[in-house]
Amino acid sequence: MHAVILAGGKGTRLMPYTTCVPKPLVPIGDQYSILEIVLHQLSHYGFRSVTLAIGHMGQLIRAFVGDGSRWDLSVNYLQESTPLGTIGPLLGALDSLPEHFLVMNGDVLTDLNYAKVLRQHQASGAPVTVATYAREVRSEFGVLDVEEGEITHFREKPVFDFTVSMGIYGFSKSTLELYPAGQPFGFDDLVLDLLARNQHPANFHFSGYWLDIGRPDDYDRANAEFVSQMPQLLPGLDSAVTDKTQAASNAALYSN
View (spheres, rainbow, N blue to C red):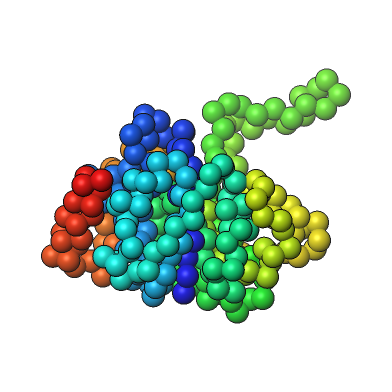
């Protein structure tokens, strides 16, 4: 099983934490970076190869991860010279990818079993499978319905339910071969085009632990919850092996 991790963004929403390090390397719980947790999880769930799509401060990610052998993974790199969106970086590298593979953002903290997403995708025949999560958004205001100058309904601080993408996808190479390489192309562009052609993506609903660490509030929550969530986020953890891996990772980073 192969995974592509999108780690090329500038992380501007997470400033000032991302001033000196790329977002996938910000520490969680003062022990592990987000990317380190993700690589541990992928290895635990049976993935053996990873492509890291890097751009902004990509040299730090290369120094930290290396060839991936510390996680029993084979890691190669896809360097972005200009931002190409979520899907754009993949379009020029399809020859190096298997027919079915996982794609995920490099700033996701979850206890999702990634292998289940990819296996469901392989079995479904869908053009793409999207891992989804139910979220509630609470309005800070009373909401009014107005028709022809009159208020017809009033709701005090209502709660709206949404299904959102987790930033984790199962892809088939044959789906992406339809699109030209070398130009910006986002996940939103892909989904809108698939829907317009009546090719519906499949849904993989998840109700466990998930945080998209895009804002300082999310990052603070991740740090506050890490100790309680650590057994789920780092399955099969061997503290002695992990301490050794942590020391090797830090040495690689700071020697560069």
